[in-house]
Image (spheres, one colour):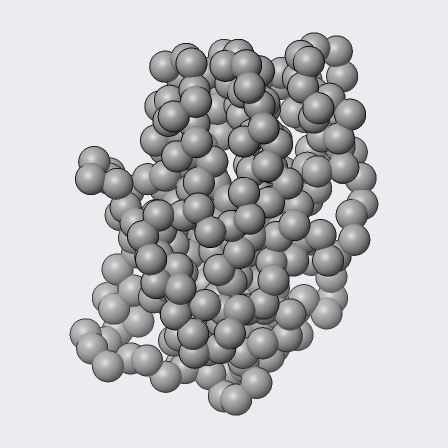
Length: 270
């Protein structure tokens, strides 16, 4: 691993932490293609539902990490990348919170244990240059790992709302990969190695704790200078108002999860 994380605790634990990545979506299996609900926007599969839940979970750790980067970052590149995390995930979160009730999906309010570990590691970094390097490399590896998964969901889903979210997620992930690389701190060889040879982790480490169906949902507030915009779901859904019902009973749940209405994004165990 060389000097990827000079002096950092992650030098020994990165391989265990970074898998499968930002969204925690595992390689799709045949069971993920199982249709769990029929909605007016197309069938909803297990993979579709997991994707919505874990896009949400991504924001629950990357949004506060972005806030942390604005405070602790010592290079302009890290500060800019941090602003992109806050901006991009606030917009993605708005889209998730819009489509989740339409598809009867309950959203989490806390990130997965793996993702909470990322936040804890970056919170514990003391030296500015150590934080900057850990920040850039963790985020580059996680985004690079998930890029192909986002593309798979986009190319295979038959659900119009999930497809729109995948479009937005694709643009956001690519933007975040780019700004991490522009920090000049990414060890690209190590990043590619981590992406192509990830270790296995228990499913429990990759799954956000379930929320309470019908409960309040934590809001990741857009920054005052926001440039990213949520998807216009009403336009895509083909209805101007009142489209709140979606799937048949059973489209909710599985191992996915739900809902605190607040601003800020620090309620993720970090």
